[in-house]
Amino acid sequence: MGTVVQSFYSFLSCHQHGIAYSGKIADGPGCGSHICECGVPTTFQAGPEVLPNGNLFGLVIIFYSAFLGGILLQLIRIPTVPPLPPLVGMLLAGFIIRNIPSIGEHIKVPTEWSSTLRRTALTIILIRAGLGLDPEALRQMKRVCFRLSFGPCIIEACSAAVFSHFIMDFPWQWGFLLGFVLGAVSPAVVVPSMLCLQEAGYGIEKGIPTVLIAASSMDDIVAITGFNTLLNLIFSKGSLILELSLTSSLFSAALGYPQKTAWGQTLTGTMQLLLSPSMSLVLALHTPGLLHFFTACGVALSLLYHMLMLAPVCSILHNVLSTLWDVLVGALVGTVFGVFIQYFPSEDQEKVPVKRAFLILSISVSAVLGSQHIGLHGAGGLFTLVLSFTAGLKWAKEKTRVQKLITNAWNIFEPLLFGLVGSEVSVSSLESNAIGTCVITLCLAVFVRILSTFALMCFAGFSFKEKIFIALSWMPKATVQAVLGPLALETARLMAPHLESYSKDVMTVAFLAILITAPNGALFIGILGPRILSRHCDPSKAKVHLPGLEGH
Image (tube, rainbow, N blue to C red; front, side, top):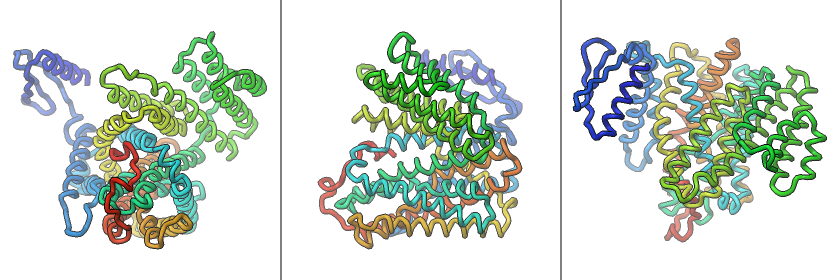
């Protein structure tokens, strides 16, 4: 691997000196030599990684197959029928590669690689969700947005838990975990479809596209938060004291304020006084201005810490309080870093959007991956969400440019994500009755979601047909399911192999949910939208503009 890096550096050195670079493959499997036109040869030994059964070989095959699958699905055009989302083609490409014996037996991707790639994809989804939350739209239509964001997701999660408990013999904890996997709507399907309707002038008088676009990000947040909570409850091992010490170190090291300043005393003291809630409360009462926020968090964390110490290590109460601890830590640290990125880099620098996008991506990916290693499983995702939302509040028009850069990163990880999800599903390992129970559970949960969405839109000023359209538009599932389904499977394999059978069923239901609801949801929106929604003669005068959501 080191020789590959040396070859890469040689390429960069040639490129910097304006020298053309040409590659020639030497004889021998896995061997190659790259020769610059300046006459300087550079060699590398790729090894078995790029050959069949190699890790890089499998990853590259999955990526390009999924990429081509998405393009081929976009080329399929049927008159009067809207195009299908490319993610369905990516999913099917991974599934086909895995289940063709002559190809699938040579495609192997290590669990660590796929897990890291999925968590990175989840981080990008959360960044886009945080940047996509528009405060102005939420203020204008807050009641309808909150109904759509919380109601259908929570109701579907509860109904899926009940159905899976009685139909699939799931324990209640696994039932609710499955429910929150299914509970998220897919912005990758909803947002582009709604933007097309909005540009054509459909439904904009009542702000239907605006409501669905704004609520789709919040719906994902609710589902991911619920999933992380249930994942902690199922697999928690209670390494809390280590978490506290590491979190305290993160605060003092990451923030880096001198302890002699007011900020330094407050921020480091907040973590150091966790063992004394009364002293934290005294400090909060005597600290002026914005510092009240951090010291109040210190009081909350102190009380939570002592409640955790009083709770039995293996009790449900301990797991719930541990999850609350992760949420508080993620929200507090995310707010601090979000305020920091609002002002750094400064406006007078060059390529500020590029630097901001790089900062958000690097910090967020480090937080999500690092939080898994130190035991704060639920903190990384919330940190990413709070960081991106807080940072975007100060960026105004520059936020759109940052979102486009984040979207470019998503365009790379999307084929990897859906290709890997498709390759996880093996036909030979599926039982016929298991597929039937998974489909029945999925269909019943989606049906309850449609009914609950219709009911929640009552008394919101929409007509009967518009409520039907909103209910059917709130059905597609894709991106979040592609991350959370395999994540449950990988966690069970690493921490509790005896629970792998439940996680495989969760993975199967997530796969079927994408395959069934994503194309049907896109068809419902594209076909019913122009027929049900009223059209405004001048869309530019009626629509509520949401800055930055075009790149969602």
